[in-house]
Length: 254
Ligand SMILES: [Zn+2]
Image (cartoon, rainbow, N blue to C red; front, top):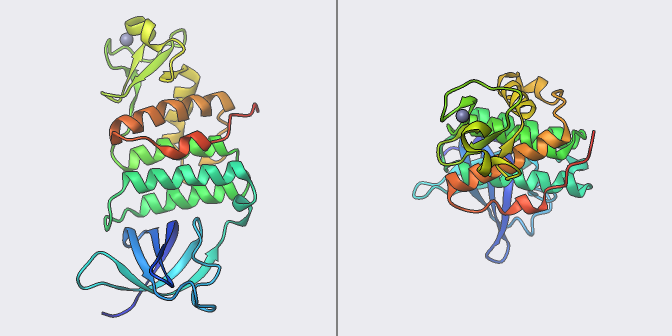
């Protein structure tokens, strides 16, 4: 088959046989895919220092005739996002972002919007936007893209719009808000609680152009609330744990 070129962000690497590597990446053209880089452990020229997690590459590959696996011929490093490798919080947040993409997307089902959002998250971490804020904003945008956007404009039980004096929880089963008038005992102090201020930030985060998203000054408390609530929601949707959640940084004030 004729070789093809695509951009890709590496999400996972595994050793394979004696000298090969399996590289899982997300590309706007192929979606989530895994490619085999033959001789990657030996090659000084074609792959060295390029096949690392969280690198943006231009990849030359051949599709396989018989399986979903690609054969990687060469890779050019476009961005190593170096500063996120030197900072624990940034790195663990990149792990969280990568895990969500791995869990929520299917192989060979490309969505250029997911690639762009993933690139935004790594770039934002690289330039020093507060990691927990990046995690929160990424999560709410990804849920929209994969079709699981929570309903954030009203209580799903009494149907009343947001009221500043109330607190809200997200019901993972329905993906809707529940107000404290309807279910006070289950919301108060739980990991499903969202303040009206945080909900307003999330509504803005959904609307903004991606290049403006990093400027949204979501407070640390709002980012913590968002990650707690949306991760619980994601666990419910996926029926499995999000392992990298436990390595995320605690919120800093400011
Ligand atoms: Zn209600």
